[in-house]
Each structure stands twice: as C-alpha cells, then as structure tokens.
Length: 124
Length: 405
Image (cartoon, rainbow over all chains, first blue to last red):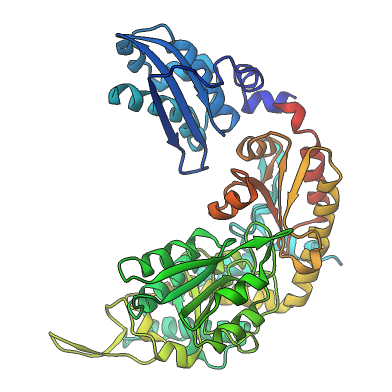
C-alpha cells in the first residue's frame, strides 16, 4: 500500500471514498460545468448565493480521484465565504490541502473544479 | 525460443526501471518501442549520408535519395502494394487521413455521404466532419453492437448510391475488433464509393496485403510498427491516387511552375510537398526489415497468445470489466478494461507506481465511450517484445488495485 501513498495522498483517498460535498443542491442559484479535454472528465458545480455570500455548494460528475478530491476540498474551503474570498482561492491552496505531489500531466485534474468555480462566480 | 526472448535484447529501453521496478511496457498500441537496428540505421544515416533528397546533385544527396526511395520499396513489399508509386510518405496516420479528407472533401457535393463507424479513432472522424462541413454533405456512422462488432445489417443499409467514401478502422484501437474490411471494401466498390482503411492498429500486428484487400486507400503509422515517429504511410491504389487532386502544395510535388499555375509531379511525389522525413523513412525501412525477419504471422501468433492470457487473467479478477471481443482469434493485441469504480487514470497512475505502463482514458474514441456508457478504460497492448510474465505482472497488480485507493 506504500506505493499508493506515493501517488495518492491520504487526503485524496479519503475524499474520493467519502466525499463531503458531492451531491445535488436543491435551490442552486448558479451552476457551472467544465470538461477536461485530456480525459473527458466532467465536473458540475451547483452553488447557492445569498447576496455577497456563497451559502452552499455541491458537485457532481464523472472524474478521477484527484479531481473529485480537489472539488471536495475546494467546496469545503469556499462554502460560507464571500464570493470575493472564493474567487481568491488558488491552485497552490488546493495542493496544500490535498497534501499531494501532483505531476504536470495530472495538474488539470486539480484545477478543473477551480476553473469551473471561477467561471461560475464571474458569470454571476 | 519465444519471440520476446529473441527480441528483447534488441530493445535497450526495456532494461529501464520505473519507480524502482523493472519497466513493464504495455502501451505499444499508442507507440511501440524501437529496436537497436532502427536507432542505428537512423544514426548511421545522420553521421554519414544526411542531406536533402531528390534535387541535390552531390554524393550525399544521391545517397540520401537512394536510401529514402529504398524505404518506399520496403513499404511497397510490406503492404503488398502493386507498385512503389502507390506509397506516399506522410507524417502519420492522422496526417494521411487529413490529406485524404482534404483532397476528397473538395469533390464532395450537397447530398453526398461519408460513412464512418462508431468505433473510429477521432482522427478518422474529425477530418471527415471537416470535409462534409459547408458542402451540404452528410457524415453517417455504422453502429457498434454486441461485444464490439460493426452492425453488418446497418452497414449494408447505410451504403447507398449517395455514399462517396467509406472510412473504417481495420482494427479498433480500444476493442481490438478486427473489422471485415474485405467485405466492407467490396460493398463500397459496388456503389462506387472510395474505401479508406485506417490501419494504424493493424499494420503492426497482422500480415497485410492491400492488393488483396482491394481498398482504395490504406494508412498506418510507423511509430507503432517499431519505427520512428514523424513519418506516416499512405497507400493509394494507383487509379485512386491518380484521380486525387493534391490538396497541399510546395516544392517537390510539381513538374513545372508558372506564377499562376503549375503542373503536378508524377506519383507518389505529387503528394509529398516539402522536405520529407528522410531519417524517419530510413528508420522505417529498418523496422520493416526487422518485422519481415520475424515474419508477421509469427508476430500475430505471439500477440494472440498474450491477448488470450490477458483476457483470461483479467476476466478472472472480481470487479474487472473487459471490453471488446473475448475471442483473441478475431482481435488485435489490445485489451481494454476497467476496475470497479476506479477512474482509468487513477488505475493507470497506480499501475505506473509499480512500473507498469498502460494507456488510460477515452483513447481518442469518445463516440465509442459514449456507446459503452463509460468515460474511459485502461488499455494494455502488446508487441513483439512483450513477455507472458509481464501480462501476469499486470494481472497481479490489477487484482490489488481496488484496495489501494
């Protein structure tokens, strides 16, 4: 199992198996979807905005463990924050939370939920 | 002696270790490794004979031209083409398909139809989408049925007097299905349609005879056939090539040029504008010599044994789903599979940690993935140097995958 730890951090494995923010969101005010052209992975975000605040967030979609874990920790980070704070989240923030050493070929898996979130919030 | 025991010493890269483990390279369908003979032929050319080809009136130019044109003879023999004029060098299978779609596309009119299949690689889909676009022509596709076969009834129905082109993979890059190209070609000919066969996955694995197949065009990629990247093979039946107006211009493809017009060169150079991939052609010739020395029937037999072993071992693992025909006799040297709910990229990354290189993802066949209802697969593929114990190592690693994530 040590080899798996080298590829996937315990945070990624935990979030993949037991996501906290995966699901549909009734009463979403903003939705966004993005696709990773490398692998065809798809992430859909559903957000409920209350004035300047991002009150609630959920994700669905077919994706790898890295992408799902990234979405999960991203939504945990931004839920309850202001939209201004939410769009300020960076890839580095996510990598730090994921405690993962991500190769360049898989970096898009980390950034896909973040780019979807930023597109959604800028559009709103 | 087993074929892999015979060939492995010729492939320096197979001595590599990856992530502390001996490399198990099971991604030959994406690109095969190269034997020393190919690498040495290319180095020797660059060290002793390199120059531009065809119009260099000096010794090196003559040597380079002779080597380059000799590679064409190798390809003619390897594919069973009737003459060397029928062999055009491109940059790869994708390039060859684009060349054909551009050139044939110009002749398409409103109502004309191009017929492809649901199991095509994107490179045999997109160029045809581009060819029919804006011309009022229509792109149609033969559905995939059962374990991964073309729907023969639908095919018969879809080929009509309106069909101008039938473009089909000889061997599917995901399912491994060997399509009945002889029958497909014959049916296309009956209605006066051109047949274009994507042989990228067939040429490295099967004995070929394009004259026997009777197709108008056949394209393949030397880098999947133990040869170098950067060069492609386009076979065109002489009459079909002759009828084709070149879509790309430049040096070498002309006889005489005026400011407002030009007269095209003879076949095959008419379709080879610009400086061709000379060193790559020389590497290709060495690869063909290597394959011919083994014999393609022996290559096919070796790979059938590996494919059968992989199908048996992977099917026996709980939670593994295998895609494509289960009978290795009617299958190329690829086995696509998924492991429980693991994303193919996660599975591939975990296998890489054990030194095992496989392909994962949609394999540039998204319409097929949609048909299968999946986002992608893991794919193991084999070549002349693949050893049975590598297949066993794959199966052992796969059986432990689910518990690793």
